[in-house]
Amino acid sequence: MIEIEKLQELIDKSNKIVFFGGAGVSTESGIPDFRSQDGLYNQKYKYPPEQIISHTFFVHKTAEFYDFYKDRMLCLDAKPNVTHEALAKLEAKGKMLGIVTQNIDGLHQLAGSKVVYELHGSVLRNYCTKCHKFYDVNFIKNSNGIPTCSCGGVVKPDVVLYEEGLDESVIMGAVNAIENADLLIIAGTSLVVQPAASLINYYNGKDIVLINKTPTPADYRATLCLHDSLGSVFGKLNI
Image (cartoon, rainbow, N blue to C red; front, side, top):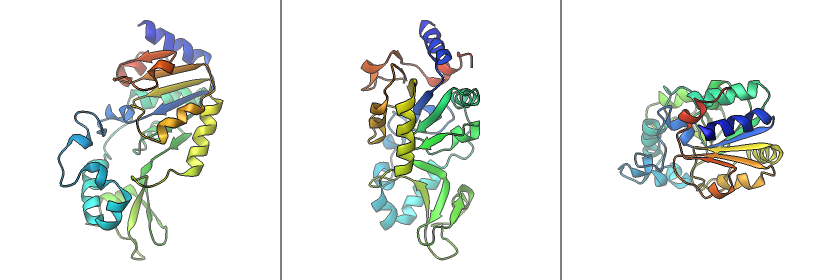
């Protein structure tokens, strides 16, 4: 409980908090991660999942990409959990500069957060690769085979696949928030996915809180390090 009290103290005195989160934020909403024992990378498919969610695979084996994508990456029944809700409350109180997330599920916005930098995009947005017309996630979910635009083009999720670069405007927004933060909370991420993980190096403040079930490369930098589930941590805070 001493760690929770320390975290409460850091949050209470901060007014420019930035939350940097990974898959561990959403696993408690029932969304599978990639690298844990039960994650997608450790499940058996015809092709390795990391190959399936690559740009090359999307272009050359589009039907098989969508078989996997619709089956494993659209978790539309998932609801925000206690962590999402706590962060939304902090923003409503004027204590958050923003959320920088590696997740693509849109749960932060569903919980009420407004300033969310989605480094890897979102399954909720989809665009025609030919005319750029927008389609919502239900269009993808309910499509038969390859989702096709009215113009005949293939519709692609607005998610960053392997071999694709991150959106420059999203990176700039995230970097600006991190640079101006007075508290950086890093949670639910192993900090091994680049270039996303390197963004924490832009933090200029004093205090870093790191919450993750397993150790990360940035543990040594943390003012406070909690190897615990996010739900058990945020569920004990007074926000």
